[in-house]
Image 1 (cartoon, rainbow, N blue to C red):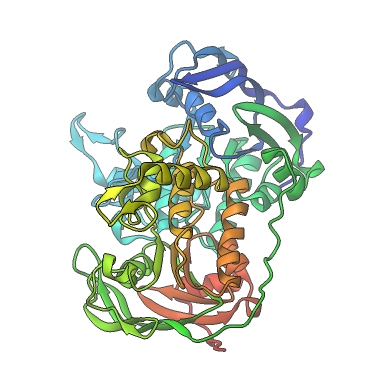
Image 2 (spheres, helix red, strand yellow):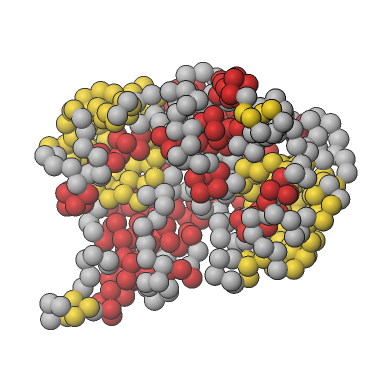
Length: 519
């Protein structure tokens, strides 16, 4: 995005002066000074733990800085609380939406600031009218009467933005706003951002790790590394490669990864599988697919369309209502998760916190889990060989660049990205012919992403059969040899990676099925 106005002459609307934020043992923000201008799109990028979310949480009033000052519209913030920031015109849309699924769209938008009749009776008709007026003003199309849980993720994000705008925000912070959107929904969001910036002079701050989006939408970009602001640049003077190098302090290569070797025999066979979700409703509706050794089959789908349930079914974490799953020719349909792992399956789960790690346990305990009875880590499966375990864990700790105080650190104290490295280190250290991977780099910075991608490709090139599900289309396109699209629990498309563009595949992800291409 290139603003028509001269950004050098724009008024400063938000100012950080020598802001530091220290948590026990961690300096999250280190003497940050930054000006953000009225009527610009400002992108804030950096690795996990770089301090960008902490800085924005200070602005939104969630955190109080250890030292330094914050000014909004020339006035110093004397107290730090979301209510104070909201009253100053600061709004924030978090990556994980804060909405009530059973409420209507309108009820969510006016929540905590509901219109009343006679001062105390909830005026639902007025709430619907307010929503309709917001839709007309900002161009974010929603139906006020829709029940939120029945809407798409893209609509829910619009509701979050409209809720923020209803509260009078003229500085809008968006945390990873496109993480769950299709390419077409992303483009629609960008059009809205451009409209509110150009027509009403709103300031938009975007926290993102997608560098091509920085180039597409922002006027200026600030780069953070290890708590410090290492640079603020006009976007027109930058490119993705320079940004990536500023973020990690070295050259980063995120080009399409080349395949070596040939595909072999079928290792994963999914045959007409039906699976229910947690409510007992159909989630996977007759899906069939195969993955061969030496290939990656990527699943492209908007969250909530059955891909999570499918992955859980394949790995034994969810009951299969009907159909069959074969791993290396063996029927594993009725086997437990532990029994399936014994058939040569490693699994990186979607939710690292609930199913990927034991937060109260240490890094070494998480890395060794499942192997503690194997040689050389135990004597006859009875007595643990602690020195061998420590050497093994320390080797993986270094190899996978896990950043913590040491292998005795509790996993719950790590950042999300480092938690993910613990999971990856454990699962990739298994010499298994089959890998089932869900959201491998969610919440992971660009340097760690590059590392994890390289490890996935290394496994593929060494002959592993890999089933990959990711909400990040860039990731699916970069890693996959073939791609299937899923909508409402059914396959809507099947492509070789080079056969279709990211924009076109978005149609299949929303159920707009065109002529399906097979191998």
